[in-house]
Length: 181
Image (cartoon, rainbow, N blue to C red):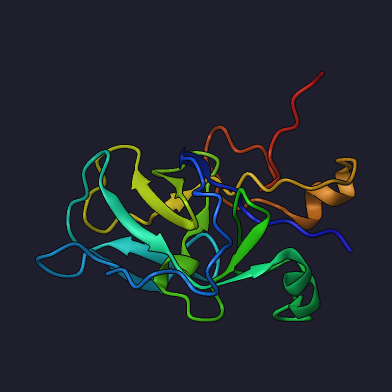
């Protein structure tokens, strides 16, 4: 079975300390009230939407959940046997995973897009989703999952991780583009 989880861009080096079992408490929304809302998505299942204007560079949400090892993630997988490639896992640079199904928040509902308006940024064992551009009220929030797998990329594998974003630059898969050597 192939496993994949989004991997954030690192903003700060890891402290070198062992991963905590859970992420530190952090407000999902900035002072002054909620900025996002979960509701049905036109792309896939549930999605997260801006209910206040968001500005380029804003830290919109923290991706929270239980921090576990990859082995624990493999032992738990799949969350839903009818959708074996659907998880709420987020890969950390130190080889651990954030499992958004356990102790997670609304960030787990952010969908993938090949033209995202958010980017994931790792700071130690925390992952934050930042706005890449100004985002209007009512816009759905997206980041590029850029799923990394060890297996050779085949048409079948791309289909297993199909992308439904429908953007002009859609690559047809949530898998990361492998760079030629």
